[in-house]
Length: 253
Image (tube, rainbow, N blue to C red; front, side, top):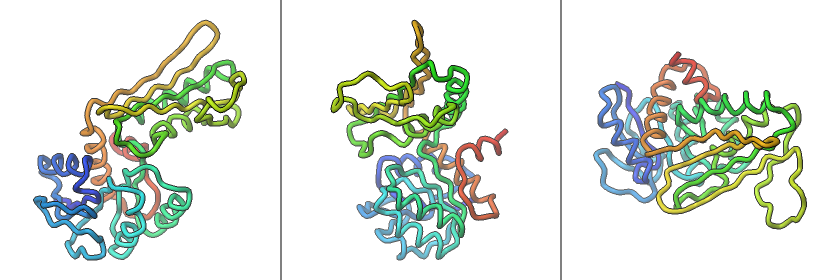
């Protein structure tokens, strides 16, 4: 049985991960990290450095501000970590890549298998449709989400960019300028409201026709389940490095 620590265990996603693990006979949550410590079915530590509970892997659904202490803990204990938090700064992304030289790190802005499938579709569509089609990405999330655009929207924009014969410009805000849309732009729009779990649409607009590729998340369980699958995958990884959903998908095939 694989022993899991949940970073951000008292948050919305942390609780969903804990619930999924409770129904999975192959894993056990043995501890949690959270500044807002609440009583759970396992010990919770405000500071990872205080944790002495043996474990195999960490799943992180916390906040970018918790990254430094989390990475320090994982390096000290030679423990792989699944980073499902979004909104990291460039400096933090550099720190993650450098830490991956010492331990296995699984990082994805979206743990949904479905999202990772449509990423391939978006890249292929961009490659086939070419420069004569305009590309726009729209994402919708609940009112509590902090970062905008979402990490998933940026992943989808990059998937489209990877299929194009040119390097596009990401445009996040059009209201400050009054000019026609550039032919080498990818627009990214963010909407926030209510309890929307997550909706992402990539629109390809050509002459007299439009293609839309859309993913709707009906619950947070799809992300939590993906993170648990990623944790299981990491416990089988022997070498340090950066891993993502594409590695997991290949493993499942």
